[in-house]
Image (cartoon, rainbow, N blue to C red; front, side, top):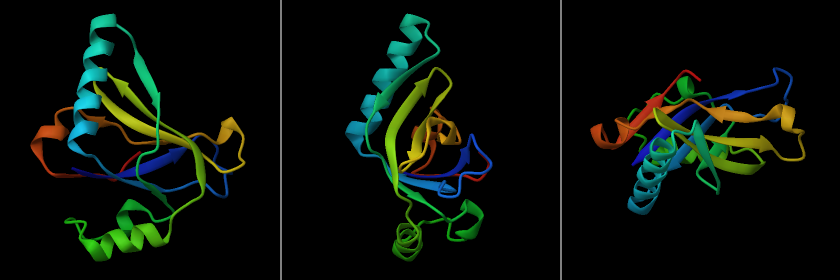
Length: 133
């Protein structure tokens, strides 16, 4: 499954903050997200955060990629505008999940988050694009 998500940064003045994130989830990633969602629900917790690297964080805006199929050309354009980031994580909540990062060498005040992906999107389509963070 491919996700192309808009990114929002806590700081409006973060010069190296990405604008989008392209993630390709494997079957094992989908199982992991479902398992974490179940744990969040059972524990009646707000969220679970797992530190891991997912996807390509890019300077391109979601609206700049006009190819909804995310073919090789679109993926190459996204990857050519990649950002240097660190401290990536996956945050799973009862209503969905999202990804976070911090631009390389930036303070925590420049935390970047993708738009939330509802769990229902994992079964409804092979490509999910969210243009609003």
